[in-house]
Each structure stands twice: as C-alpha cells, then as structure tokens.
Image 1 (cartoon, rainbow, N blue to C red):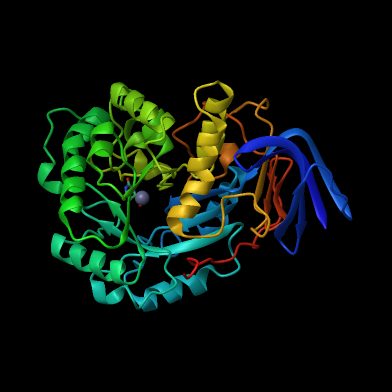
Image 2 (image 1 turned 180 degrees about the horizontal axis):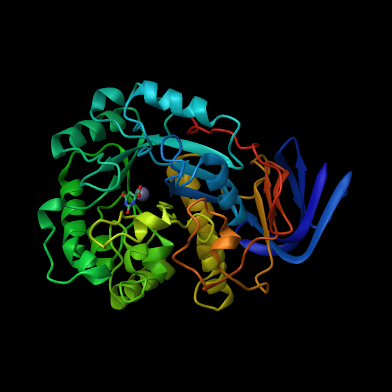
Length: 416
Ligand code: DOR
Ligand code: ZN
C-alpha cells in the first residue's frame, strides 16, 4: 500500500489524514496509516483530481493546435486527471466509425484519463455509440460547423432520453445574431448577444426532454435564469474572470463571447452562490498566427485546461470563493454530470489526487502551461499550480513537472 499524507479533502472538509492506495484505488482514509511507501506532503492540500468536462484537444486532424499527448500533459499540470473531449475534431465524430477510429488513434497517448463525446446528426446514431460519454449539440454555427436544426435536435434529445444518455448543448440562437457597428471583443459580444443565449435556452426548454441535458458555457445570469429545472449548467473560467474590456484582441474571441465587466461580476456571484453545477475550461486552442489575423477572420476559442483549477484556487486563497464550492464544481459536479466514478476521494474510488500548496502563488505563463499553441489568455494572472498529481495512484506530475505519460485510459459512463 502507498500512503499519501497531507490535509485531505474528505467527506466535504479538510483534515490532516493519510490516504492509502492499492491497485490504483483508494483503500483507506485514516488519521494514521502505515504502508510500504509513504509520501508526506505536510500542510499541502490533497484534493480529488479535477474533471474537465469540456475540452477540444484537436486530435485527430488539427494536431498543429494541440494533440492528445500535449493537451493531456497540460491538463495534468493544472490538476486535471480526467478530460472529456469534444467531437469537433477532423473528421468530426458524427458516426460510430468515426468514434471508433478516434478512440483507436488515441489509445496509449494520454497523460490523464479521458472520455469522448460524439455529435450525432440524428437520433438513430445515438444507440450506435454506446461508449460516447455524451452527445454534443450545437444550436448555432461555431468552430467545426456541427450545428443541427431544431428537428434533428429534438430527435437526438428523444433518442438520448430513451437510452438515459447525456446531451451537452451549445446554446446560441443565430436568429438573434446582429451585425454590430463596433469591432473587437465588444463588437463580438454584440454580434452574438446575451439574448441569443437566452433564446436558445428557452427553445431548449420547449423541446421534449427525457434526456439528461447540460448547458455548456453559460455567460450571464440572464441565461442561467432561463435554464429549465433539472438541466445542469456550466461556467468557464474565461467568462468568470475575463471580459470584453481586456486588451486581448482576437486572443479573447470565443463563442459564446466574453461579456461586460458587470455581466462577469454577476456571473461570478451566481457561481459563488452555487447556481452553477460545474466549471469546465472549454479549452479550444488555435494557432498564434490564426489569432493574429484581422478580428473578423480570426477563429473563436481559447485554451484553458491547465489554468481553471490554479486560477480558481487562487480566488479561494484570496477569500473570494469557498474551497468546498471549488471542489464541488471542478471535481464532484463534472463527474456526476458525466456519470463517471471520479471526482471524490472515497474508499473504492480511483486514487486520482491533486497535491497543492495554496501559499505557492505563481503567475500563469505560456511556458508553464505548455500548450502546443504556445499562448494563454490568462498570461500574468496569479494562480496556484499543483506540486503533484496522481492518476490511479501513479504520479503524472511531480514537483510541478510532468512525470509519467501515456497512462491515461478511456473511460465510459457507469452503466446503470
Ligand atoms: O469558441 C469556440 N471555440 N466555441 C466553440 O463552440 C468551439 C470552439 C473550438 O473548437 O474552437
Ligand atoms: Zn467547446
């Protein structure tokens, strides 16, 4: 048995304890434990490994921007031990064959555990992809052109409902898009306004639902208010921490867009108050050259898989956010929404652990996060990066540096 000691987040609170690990699982959490090998992390926190339910790792097909080894290495550096990868890779994951080919191409190349989404174009494809962690539905055009119309969407929702599967919705209504007079990030916000999100979420509310539905990247409280009961909600660190007043140019261009400082503040308060089920990065890297194009031509999306947890833990240290709330939204919540047995330190669970000292405050830099795309929109912001990360008991980060790679396994939803 391996024993890991520190201040352990167990049963909803921190206590000085030891976690016993055997065969990749947590086998005991006690005040004192004796094992063959002990790692004592002193006062550092031992938290459940983070689960990022929304990443775009660009593999296969767009690996110049990111690939599975690089993206999952960055994930690990940011305390993420499980990622769920979106289907707008090339070719898009719209069929069983594409799903299986993607799964085969990724095998053995991930530093952390991973799950894969599919994007069925009709309900009939839903039962053909039993290993997909869920189904992504784009209600409006975004990177990858995977949007479907309302009829196809109802069909997917119905089929997913019959099979008790998860549907993740990108909610923007293109009929509410405008041609703003202004350019830049504020213009992008006006072009794809808050009303377009609210309208798409209202339309979603009217569609037949039996499926487990999750609304991705809600940017404002108006959108949160529109989400029907029983539907889960996600916020991203960029909508919680950045706004269109930042001088990011097209490096801050993302769909749905960054909003005003007031919107950001209101979303932050809603998050702190518990109105958001999970935080996901929507890690969507694009090349620096593409982001340097004229604003209208530059692609939407920004990277973030390595910074979600470190940036938010810094807010905990500053007293702006409760640690319980962070763990709930960055580990437990996403695991629950995805239906996977991750995100909690408990006997019998995978020993996916993050060790971090919140007193160790550093600045986010492109070098530290090691994305293949070579940039981060959070450059210079203060963050608390993990000192160690364990994946099923194996160190994937040691002394803040990548350790073992290729240990990640594909996981599928727990079958009920
Ligand atoms: O800004 C975005 N970028 N929104 C999306 O929906 C997709 C993403 C990407 O893949 O680049
Ligand atoms: Zn996305």
